[in-house]
Length: 389
Image (cartoon, rainbow, N blue to C red; front, side, top):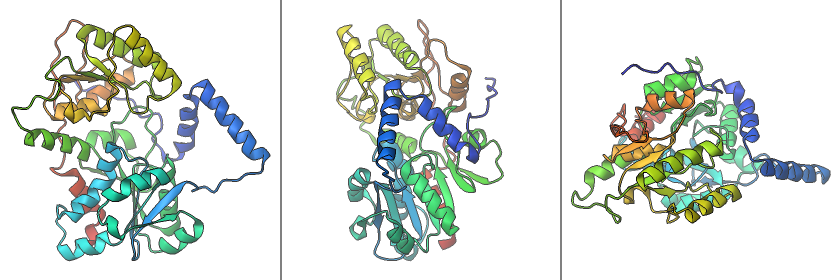
């Protein structure tokens, strides 16, 4: 099959981060933009100046910190990308000897929004030795004085933004883990960084040959976990719902396409196949909830159970969700849906080998994405702490 020639990302140079923020804000619903303007105006009228890292929480070990990991949410994609490398280190999968592993784990700190830090703490390797602290200048200046590395998903959200800034102030290295599939509007990789990408194609497309980025294709710990889980599953088990018509994974909250296009793709597929619509966890806004209610009144089933995708059965479809590849890794039929896809979306499907579903056709299921390494989390740990090997 001829490979589609892809256009570059909308924002691929580090200095385009502010342009990305303006674009992201422009995609907000009008009501949200108006409310944000009102809040900003009230704060300015009161002379309120919020500290840049207000709301962040540091989880610090007892000893000196050499590595800081920034986590923005407690969801599975961030856990797989950012927590799993330390788990690989703790479990000996990185190839480092026991003494080096113990020494390294004792110097890893974390930064996250306060609610996320609380949810993550029990699950972190060496969690018993971590204590919570506000990310105030005195604590940051004292406890991160010897910082050598930061590991982030990017610098476009609060924890990663703070971690990258602290790294640059201290001359520490910045390491970025790709945690999801890359759409045209993906924010840029921070400057002077090492990028751990899913594939070489992703790395080439995302960086466009930037000289300040060192790219290391490693694969995805999330997709690898899905593959391993399927390989170890009971072959006689079919899931709680049987094969069934499967699921359509919602993305109504997404800024990459107009909401009407996400809805049209979902309606086309579920009406043709009888699939159940599964809202994305972020579909909590008023417009999304109203759409769910309209679909239910029209006889479309909406699954609000929150059951993990790995515990469901049947085919999986979406516009461009990572769940398509998660399902493909397990051998489940999976494909993408859009009645009239824009060029960037066709290029996106091509980059990941995703098969398109169309009405009346019987598409070949999307194949599993081949990983550049057998254990992506361990590959990240080896590269991040290679000087300790």
